View 1 (cartoon, rainbow, N blue to C red):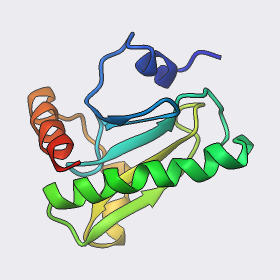
View 2 (cartoon, helix red, strand yellow):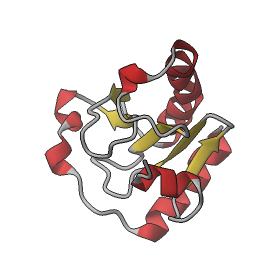
View 3 (cartoon, helix red, strand yellow):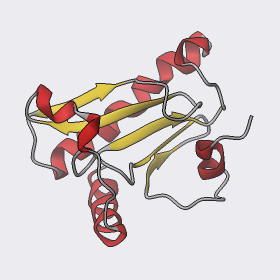
View 4 (cartoon, one colour):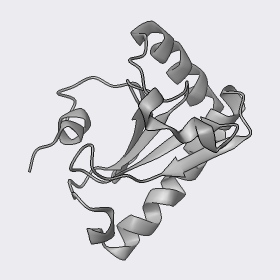
Length: 129
């Protein structure tokens, strides 16, 4: 099944890439809850996180860790919140969200971001990696 994220992986839709390897891709969310909100996805188009094989599932958080640490260095916050909702796009993904409190995890606060601001932020995060 081709999803929005599959099209991003294939380069058909542009994104602000933060990190990538043969199995995973991290990029900034274009409707962030807060600046620095990133998505980490598997390149394998699997709908449900718990349908991933053990190696891919375990590797997802290991891949996400340095991305989260880089975001934390660039975006002032107490920590990086992690959430998996799994309903927005039928392609498993993890949200990395800079937070100061639980109130910062409210998806109702998502707003379209300015493309230039995303590009500058992505540059700073990549530099921190």
